[in-house]
Length: 332
Image (cartoon, rainbow, N blue to C red; front, side):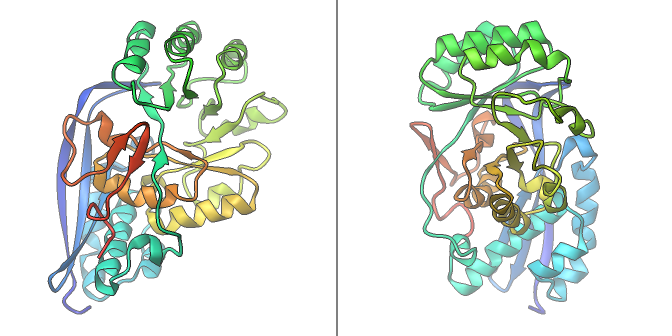
């Protein structure tokens, strides 16, 4: 691989409309693409970083570019795990190396990962924290085809309660989860829980802030609780049993498909359910996460749905299912 060359492309993907969660409102998604060329073959990886850890594109573009000499010397995916910490830079490079290996060997990424041929997956479709009526309308009009909805909450208890009730009334038929994005604590969550149960909410994601996980000790919440911000990588996975029931794997957090697969497999050994999510992005970011999704109990891969325009070719969303055609990424 002496002729292997790494290049970096940056872009800003506008969202179709502002997207609000607890503490943040997003209007676009900045992304970085790593392109690793060997002869006529090019492996690609897209990353958006992790805003709440300071892993912004400015930070990890420099990390990616610093690896140009190492890539030229034949850096492997195994080498990469020790060369960079978890985060956007390693994710972009890892996914690019996966696709390059697929092209060089003539084997799709899922086969290299030791998985069976992929199947379409039911994915959640996300409603940003908005006026309850707006969210209910979106659930019916924007996501009429959806079979699973995820509601972003803001930590404003009374308003969150109205949001959950309004969406459930509008869509009595769907699986529903809520994502608090660290907006609650052990005291404030008390009023919300009975409403979640009454509205048949199946999953509560990241209720408390990162670093405050001890508030879950002895709380005995009556529905499964998922760790997102509380678990960035494989090492932190070991801290979850006894507090969380589900781990949300995001390739930008853990640093790529290699570690994402390792987390999914280790979580099963620990008795945890597995979820795959995303930090937004185009179909190029969803494609490797779709591979992880083959091992998951809950799938949240709707990043392209939130964009004003996705790339072509892209993943497809039909009847609440996501499908990733072979030509999007990771196939010879």
